[in-house]
Length: 275
View 1: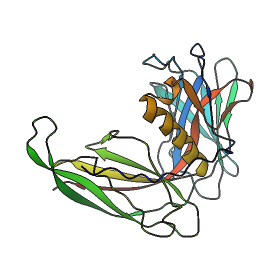
View 2 (view 1 turned 180 degrees about the horizontal axis):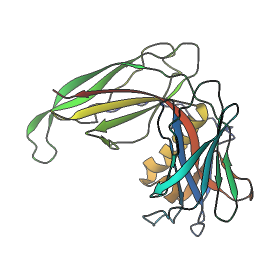
View 3 (view 1 turned 135 degrees about the vertical axis):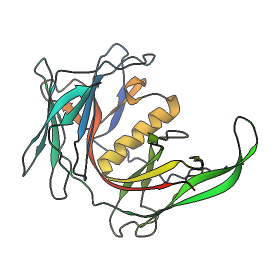
View 4 (view 1 turned 90 degrees about the vertical axis):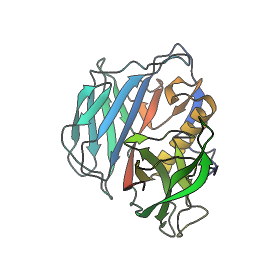
């Protein structure tokens, strides 16, 4: 079976925003997960608390005040909708030449903020085609045809770009063999983006959806460290014995660790039915 090729940069050790630090099991740390896209839609933020490495469910936060600020435009308020998720009251999009910052006020009055961030220019998927190769059914061992996506997309030249791929089958994200697929254009700057998703198996009739996210270097660095943690331990970022410290800070208590990341992504999407 073909192997998925992910071209990763080696994370620069001097990166200041994303660091790994020891995690005492007894700490109950705030975990922030939030992204805004270039699409006009309701954006979301998720708030929870970390658990121990052996824990299975992160306690959720239901009573925070959530706001996304912009440098030059109106702020966007969010409302709690359940399961730790907060949804923007109005649809909106991240646009180029604007900066965004997430602010969260907890029930105890603590103010938690992200650093200011921008959105990258979108890199479009030009073509999604279905490729295949002969394989075998993992349960029966019988011969079968394995279908997988083949993508055509061209990187913009003379600019350092960072990407994340996400693959979906019938509306569900494929997370095996890995869920965090990252690329940088250091090797293929200005050329077609190489991809080989032969380990992501589809069958006839499946709805195949592929997303290409153009992300910032800070988001790439954070996801790279998160990937290294989860790939080794097969656990969420908040349940590893070492944590990935993102771009969130407790302004009220600067020494308190906050987990997670708030960022932007310009998303190109293509879909097809496997025939």
